[in-house]
Length: 224
Image (cartoon, rainbow, N blue to C red; front, side):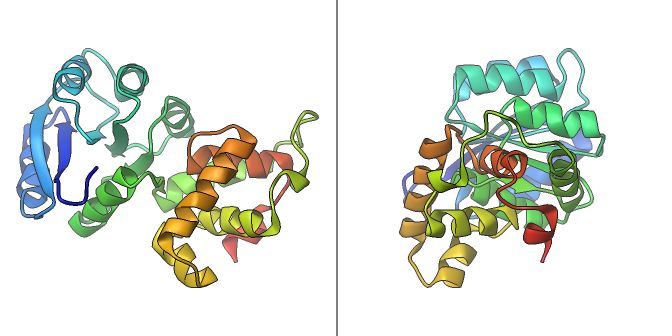
């Protein structure tokens, strides 16, 4: 997204009152524009294709096509659109399935409006956002797994890249990582891009999962 353009948002939730409420406070943001809304997964896929939004705020439990399947299709058709899941459900199978489908974030509906606004901006920048409950499920799940025999050695990443990855695993934003390491945000973005390229992933979440599976860091490392 260009700095002088607004973030184009598509809302998909089967409860009209929820959509109306979200639409109302998102529209108050100077850098947001809600370009469409719908109440089922099939329509979300169709609108995503025709409107090409920057961010799609998507519920999981919807008629005709659930949010997981909708995410798969949307990310196949428009890989540049970020899908942010906003749901009332924190079931393990939902969290893992939707992240595997390509969602950039997973939030529960107990968050406040400011947290949602911040999350939309973050996923539009290419960052990944997880509700603390979802983040814990991901970390716990992969930390219990044994190291895969074919995982890449830790020397694939430089010391500074490993440090950046660990900070990302703790949930720090690019801005926070930059402040922690006394470097620019642009340098952090470049470091993350290098990390993704080196280990063959396309997002923070995938990179963190790879690091946990490989044993590069532990739950304790990223929980301190």
